[in-house]
Image (cartoon, rainbow, N blue to C red):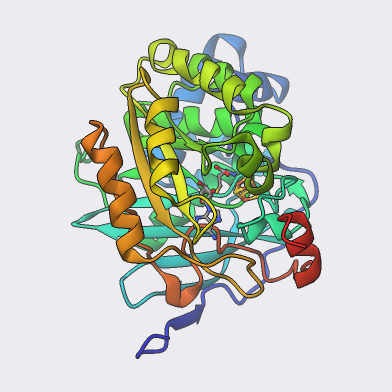
Length: 392
Ligand code: SAH
Ligand code: SF4
């Protein structure tokens, strides 16, 4: 328990109802925006230029009102305002942890809610973005996995999480200001709710906007997509997104991984490692992050550490050890600090970086694997969770 109670604020109390009809320009690829403008009367010859202008207003300067797009003719601005909207998710609550971590609960169409977490570090910071409401997968140590999938987020809802976080951080630059390399929101990790590779197109389109030099302008090296191991989509990620890849590895035998990450029954460790071997080359990225949650007595022995090193031999890798974050009803315990350090040591001596992830925002349930929407409380019973984990 924390000494100080976390601050919870209602940010948006006035419900915003979207008028029926107008289409949202947020989240569209440049091509889709161009087609849409043409379909609504923009001359074909001018469409590409108009896309560039509108795009910069929305993503570079954070403008939400067409009237402010001063390099467009007044009449054209009015036309845009009639036909389109610039809509981002609504922030319902914002909680600030003792350690500065911020957790936003955002509401999306249909009344669903997802969580977004901002983790500050030395003047920079990482935004942990959700890709689905809930998750179809049922990893037995993950809180989100106890919530049934409600739906995939749209590209607008995914990039919209970055936009509302920038709003809250007060980070949109002055219009016309030169590119600023120091960013409070300097990194994005797709490690929130959901399996991003089961929502590939929307995640890809949103990340393209995040990486666009006239968009949010984050380098692809500052974007990390975490997957539980959807093997056929990993090669596509390398080709079509080219961001950094993290893999929820978590076990060194198929027997244990089947229980922890059930997608392993479909694509086992061998199949996963095979596709990972080609990822760095195809995506031109340096190394893959292997995420490994430390579960007391389940996957944390010295033998596990040695097997892990052997398995990943030849893959440029970093192993991120994640102390298990507990949640109500969780069927596991966190490994002791000594155990985690001993495990890390074996990996480090084998020549791999083995950082231990410090849990952030635990007092507001913002740490890895603790996310779950408040509106989707239909949690499985403890018995069901244990059965899924193969413990009963
Ligand atoms: N679905 C994707 C991304 C979201 S989970 C994936 O599984 O990779 C982000 C990371 O948090 C994953 O490595 C996941 O295994 C880990 N995680 C989930 N629940 C956790 C928990 N209770 N404690 C620590 N890490 C957890
Ligand atoms: Fe889904 Fe990832 Fe949680 Fe597994 S760890 S249930 S894939 S969100």
